[in-house]
Image (cartoon, rainbow, N blue to C red):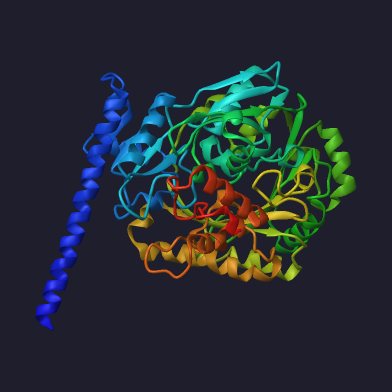
Length: 533
């Protein structure tokens, strides 16, 4: 028996060694292939970065916006590619496919589970789009082209320079890359008026799994449909998006009301549930629960109204008097100034700063289709006092308005009419705590416990989730022995993200990327035949 065990161990090590050598050889061949295709000694050092380069880890870490994925044991790419032109992306895809190298694409690095810069299977390279970040706006036609490496802050900055009456519906955090945001949907303070970012994308330039450069006409309507809300990284590398700018008044009003009394806060949140999705679409009011210090929890109600303060106060007196909004809680300003107000930015230049966060986090989300009972709100308040919730946030984002008017299948993002609001549970902790996994597990458990508690009060069959708030707890592909097909596995979380749109996404994926080149732990799966579904 000992003799057999010895030879089995020896054989296993031999196989692993050969796999390692094969992977190293593949990577070397990939780099050689890419160097030949670039064929420019002045450009190559700006594009190809291996782990032996002094700049490798600074480039890798610069856009890791969830530091828990920058720990030593986290998987690292064998190289980082920072293309400076479309042909660099095309060459990378062609060489990676030829030499069996896995690819991840990073825009801003805000993926909740780090999928844009880590992979749990095999050697991989990261295509970091930081150099492809140009923004060209056409104010007269209310359109613009935005390269995937740009951040939403940079987009806002360019809009604000040119116009006080144009805007774009996207998120609050300026360092978020447009690539992932638009590819998954894109929430923001204008969503009730104009829908998601992806609802306002009208064309795109991509590189597909064969290395072809395509626009909307070239890729076809099904392909174009899939990348706007279906998670573009499952299908291609998006180089640039053509967007439709939207009209905003030259004067908007921002406000924030805080409730520190538990009784008053719970009553106000309860009332908010009944009106937030029903007020005119010019009004966006978010509700939040968080800690102000070690011993105090408070509720806040930040909002944006597309119009003057006088109209806002009249509307609030009619629709939401329980908030107690006063003129002193409000400020009139331009839309671009409101963007700065929400992030507490001091100047326009704040929007273009690319900062790396120092806080790790874990998030989950749900969709609420009927108001929670007061007892559930009280429990949320109570759980915000937990030691693990010192930096946590519970964020309630209102739907209704334009979000309810757009059909569930207009783009892959399906969470439309019938949803009152989306609720997100976020635990944050200091980056240095990631050094000890036991220190971070308590934060994970707090989020998981809150998510479990909310089960009776959220959407069902399926329990919905937003793909831009990615959550590996919903499931991942099993790389070991598994009786399920990849489609059966992917459907587990796929229907939560995309509901009835999941099967259409699978058909598109099978058509445009039949070899499953663009894949990750939760990507859209392929089928041997689309006739199966």
